[in-house]
Length: 235
Image (cartoon, rainbow, N blue to C red):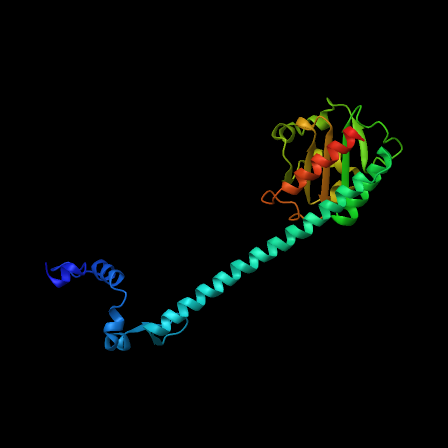
């Protein structure tokens, strides 16, 4: 066996793939041939000039470092946002637990949505029978409907999934949810309450078309829905 074969370089062919394989198998090649390293020049990534291989390696490492720092900054930002949201959910839970009556629970729910989550357009729709104890509250926030109400049944796709949904809704659905404020609503978050919406529906609206978008996480909305459903059933 020749030295070339022992080092992984074919004895006759000398194409780029073979050279690349040889350098991978011999990472100390340029250390043993520093004169070649000194003569190698590469195009500069951001200008028409050339730089040495070592300079290019340093440049690549800096670019990778900048990319990693960017990813780390994104992770930190998301973590901080989740921490802030967790704190809001905790305050939301404490307000529901501290309610002295079903009526007070609904008042605390509306206040928390407005004060903690900036949800200035919120509607809680309960199916008949679940509204007991909530009488007298403004219909702008809370109202009862029959389970077979045509407008309520238009959300059957949502109820079948059992999961919150964000984005746009039909004009008739938006009118049903937000009444005279419907023309101001750019995006909505819908949270089914109970199994297949058996208890009702929570709807949050925003003027911003991008605030509630289909790609956003709905995990915290699902938790809110579970807390509200339990509060309605067990209060």
